[in-house]
Length: 640
Image (cartoon, rainbow, N blue to C red; front, side, top):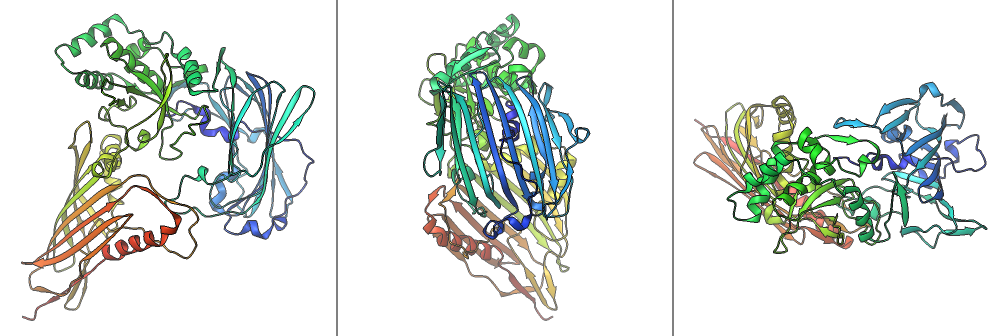
């Protein structure tokens, strides 16, 4: 699901050298002490210069110097620069320095690797990349790189986010645009003090932003997305040109109008498929029945595979091609689905969206290319749209899940494109029920039958496991999945158990855990919560800075029955525990009756945004759950 190859590597793609006096050395000793605290990486210099020559041509230059303090920052030491027919790499150079700032090595052309931009799911792509790494391991060390890329076509500009992640300190960063005087560059700033510096000449104007001496910071648990918390500048053209197409993105409607030009005439179906559509829907009474039937037909007769040639990152293959070849990427499959529905007399639209678990929300008041995926929306007649993920051959019609759910998408409509929101799944729809029937022998070995039913967002992972992994891969996952001692999985299975509104998957596992219970003399110590112990324990040492975000709510319930060996009675039973506040509710209780331990547990989590001042309440809640989940029962063997 990666139709826009170069958006994923945009930071390095649009890199280049920003001309400044050369520095011969970058000793680590010159880094201010305040920047070293909590840091894994120091951005000594990070300067991007973008020279816009007209609406369809620009030069991107970047110069950056990174000091890698330890292994945790190793990924930042490598250089990756993408290119294709719209992006030509003019120059790459680089230097490696040791901790004292001594120059050790320079980039040599023979050391720069050239690879295909395919991600494994692309059939054909003209996207490629240059890769370089000094492979130096004596920390700390410093790498400096300079890159220049010529852009022959403009559809987006990079964002500037100097502090790009946790444990990264910024010594100095600059972001500079030079444009013709009449060029309309748009930008939106976040957490930037003041205005950009503006300089004008007779024919050009220069806008620049600068930030320095920003200490590293840790990522807080359940915080807003990182890019909402740090200094960031989004930029975008007003008018643009790429691949022979011209457009504007001053408004979402204008952006969508441009997209309709890329889609125009590509929804024509072969005569045989038109006949098939009419046959499939014959006798169906409701629009929803027709949507579901055609969606399943599309799933069964096509598969996802990406073709990224020329404008292929944004323009779909036509519906006839998909019908004949039986494959396509997200754009092509969505366009094909729209064509099938059109033939059935149902109006549907392709919709641009940013798929993934992070950076989900668009900056809705800044029209620009913020998308990496395409889905389908059928508005319907009762203001109850049906959303379709066309790259999956297994997902239920109407279900978005965590990858595309609860976020804005741009509906591509030739009469008025607009932002719409995909479904959000409520707490009562995200449910996990787990039943465990187990027996314990006198050696402490536990044999358990586990049945877990998950719905909504909680079944997303199981859906991937069920359809995306081989039996061998499923077995391997299960062998490493549970936090219990010395166990083996003897059998497992998965089956769907829901509907197309809220899908559900059942997982059945048989396992054996040796030494699950601890035996000391006459006593046997056992934790009744076999599989659902919460692993999160929070500390309140540091003051909370940001609000607390629970993206979605859920309900998890567990019923555990453990048959204990004969002759044992309870010497110590844990008390029931209940906890409730704005973050959720938790209850657990234990009993021993007729030689069977029973544990009943329920954990409800509420979704929402909570003030930082509530952090202590969250700590109290999580730590109560953490402790109660690890409760032990002490059994003692009766004297004979």
